[in-house]
Length: 94
Image (cartoon, rainbow, N blue to C red; front, side, top):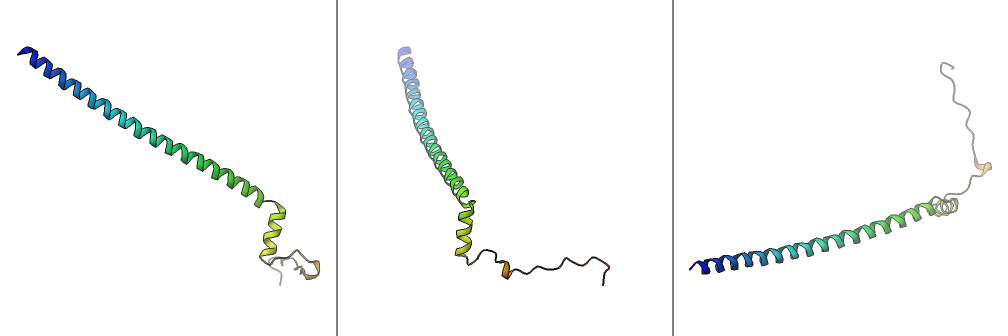
């Protein structure tokens, strides 16, 4: 009788241990999948940041600015079409 109780207890412990092992392996796989997804997002974010830095560098160059200004209908300053305004009157002067 004592042996049956011991065997039953050992079998229950064995089942609990096996269930715990399966659960921990499943959780480890979930965490690994989450880690891979986070690493992929990090790589994508770094690539996007690099692309934006390159784009910002190009956009700041005078040639790029001039090209965009011409596309918007702007033209270089022409001294013949420039009007200079007199300095602002000082306060108290009529």
